[in-house]
Image 1 (spheres, rainbow, N blue to C red):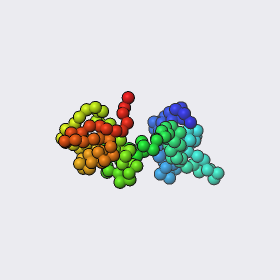
Image 2 (image 1 turned 90 degrees about the vertical axis):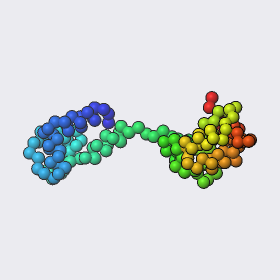
Image 3 (image 1 turned 135 degrees about the horizontal axis):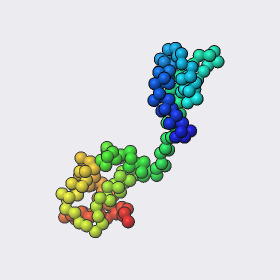
Image 4 (image 1 turned 135 degrees about the vertical axis):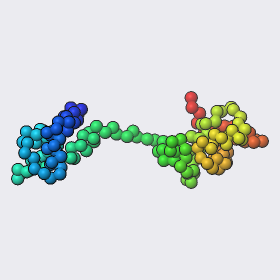
Length: 163
């Protein structure tokens, strides 16, 4: 199937006589216009049964959609975790499983620039953007070695660095 098939179906539905004939078939009514039925058949929207009756083929729309659908790209495991737990940049919940939590924490740690020291209130503001339980996130980041802390000053101490 190609764009021409889609244009053909849309063109059939744009014409009043074929639209009326298709609607009548869908609703189980009689259709007197043989020419419109034949055009619907050529477009895949109608089929003539062995007993001579006509029936609508609304599944043609699904066929066209499937033929033009773009397959979803393969995601690596970390991207799957991030898509599961992050919605519009915010955490739905902090993952309970250690491996998944580490994926999320490494992602969050990238907010902090390596070599920059942050007062605790700035860390809290950054983490609040991800989740309301920002103290737990801060604690998890420190425990995981992604942030270090001394005298209420934090700095990035691990995790991936965007180049």
